Structure formats: structure tokens, C-alpha cells
Image 1: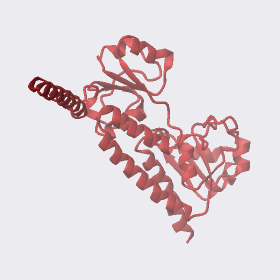
Image 2: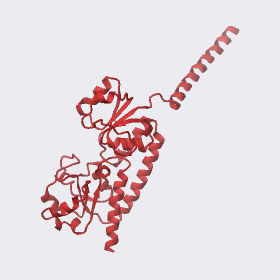
Image 3: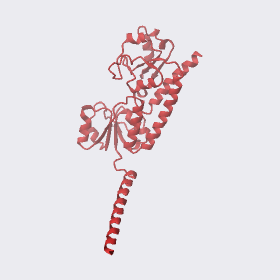
Image 4: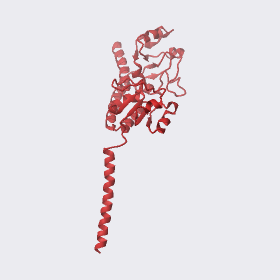
Length: 291
């Protein structure tokens, strides 16, 4: 009888012991995750900005040559458009984050034991928020990422509410002198949509690429009321005015245009809110003039 009782006690003890071990290892993995990367390479300027905004900057050992923000980002000669596996491997990274899988670089890096994350260009504001939270989770910075996301959503909501009270304006976003623009199928165009603009590029983007090529004739006939250009050329607006017929465009006649540095106007990340704020500021200033 005593033997049976001892057997039952031993059995209960073993069960308790195994449960204790299970909870211990589960808890320890939560507190001390072994898979948090400590040597990250970013081959995307947008991703670089996101990583530093969520507090993962100390984990980043190298970024591509186009990643010029924030200033403390460890810029290198690594190319995001023509990535070289051997050059990347020399940094001994435990994670490489990219936006483009050029030349099957992802497969090549994985083959030599380097983990990768491929995050293509965001398609809209919600996608930007998703990428921020995803990178927060993957780098052990979930809380910071959540705080960044909440702030961005709050600020964008305020801008949306403000612009919804105003008349919708027809906007033309010029990416380059070949009349490439950003429709609502892109993260850039999505911002205009959120801010109550009528995007003249939408009608042309029948294939849904997000970046259709417009014609000078179409732009003139659309007669945009607001023009945004992304350039470092201080004389770009003067060049716009010299184009045949462009002095008759409402946006030019009313001086309702915005010149942005290419960085702010072409990267998905926390600074997309700065992009939206600059647009709203121009509209607000214009409204003050007309009162």
C-alpha cells in the first residue's frame, strides 16, 4: 500500500517537474530571445529609417550607399540595386533586410547561412504601419515600434480630418522630367487620397503599377490645382514654368506647388507623415491668402 502511495507521489512530482521545466523554458525564451539579431544590414533607405526610428539602430552594423538618414546610420559602399553577396558576407551579419531581390540575392544569402527579410515597397499607409510593427517584432523592439505607429496614425488622422473640411484639389505629383507620377496605387498616391486630393494620375494608371507615365498634353488638359515635385534642383519650378502652356495651369498661376527633397517624397517610413504635413501646410497657407 505504501509502495503504491509512493508511486503516486513520484508520478505527481515528475508531472510537476516537467510542467515547471516547460514554463521555465517558455518564460526564458520570452525574456531572453536567442533569435534577436545583433548584426543587421539594411539594403533599403526606407528600411534603414524605420530601424532607427524604432530603436534598432544599435543593432545595425551597415547600410547601403543610399541610406543617408538618419545621419548616424553606418553608411557603406554596399549597393541596394546591385547587391554583392561576398561584400555583404564580409560584415558577418546575422540578418540582412532588403526591399528588392535582385539576382536572387536572398537565396544566395540563405544558402550561406545568412538570414534575410524581404520587404518590398509599401503600397499604402497601412502597409507602412504593418512593416514598422513587423520589424519591431523581428528586432526585439515591438514596444517602440508600436509607439511609433500610434503616433503616426494619430498625426495622420488629424491631417485627414483637417483636409476633409476643405475643397478637394486636383494634384499632380511629378517624379521626374519624363512625367512619371504616383497614382493612388502607390504609398505616395495613397497619402494624397487620404488627404482628400483628386489624383490626376489615377485615370492613367490602368495597369495599377502605382507609377504611370503621363503626357504633357494630359497634364495640361487635367489642369491640376496643386503640383508636387521631388528634386534637389532649386530651379526646377522655373523649368516647369518654361514648358509650353504650363503658365496656364491653375497650380502655376496660383503658386500652389511644393518642392520636396527626393528622400522625404520617395521613402516609406515614419517621415511619410512629414511629407503629408508639408502638403497640408501649403494648402493652409494658400487658404490664408484667399481669405
